[in-house]
Length: 184
View 1: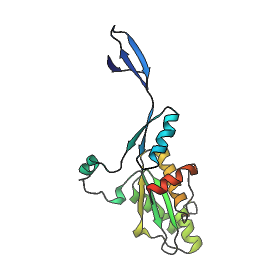
View 2: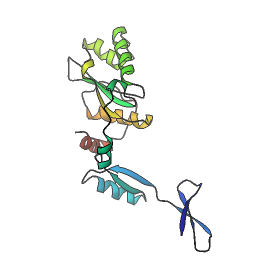
View 3: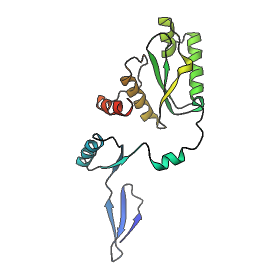
View 4: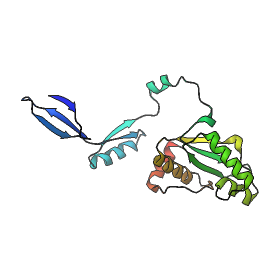
């Protein structure tokens, strides 16, 4: 029997010995980052919903060999979740942007100078007489898909209880233990 791609999404066309076509539905699959003890449980849950779990690892030989490019400057990185710490307290601003980090930081700096109350960094700085620590800005995560990026931003805010920014999405708390294990 030979398998040929079909125009129907999620199905494959199979020809039997007599050349007749037969369409078989494919079982959907989902990639899960492998974390011992947790991934197996998630895999069993996926199986109970007829979803095939595929495990992946952050560190693979292929990824190690491909990581020979020099790192790009963080200011030119796009599709990010970032953190701006405060110099005067333990708080921090966590945000997300599809644009370059450098451009987004310019906007935050301008908002602080002009006291733009719609900007979380400026609001914290002016209301508390605090100063953002522009030299210690970090990229927490990268995500090209806008909805996933907003969810990751909100999850990072939930993990960091000192964040003074407001999330733009409301993710379920069920993901928190897994995220804490991945990003301790």
